[in-house]
Length: 88
Image (cartoon, rainbow, N blue to C red; front, side, top):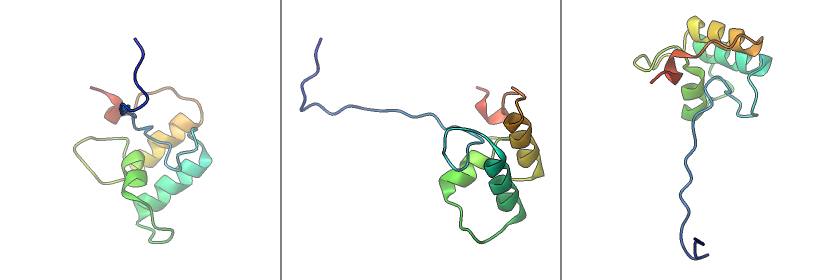
């Protein structure tokens, strides 16, 4: 049936892990951003959401490390390996 215009819609979004800048693709810019986050670069300041998208290697370890950078680089060059954080 039809939903009245006055009824609120509920939207859900999935996190696009590895796409740190949120442009819809995982590319060299995301690799650079992941490397900066892993190295602790303080400028530019990354948001909590960007840091979360950079952490692709572990659901239990909130730190972004070189492992995350390598996994994002692999995905950027076309490897279709699933990120561990995407597993159930």
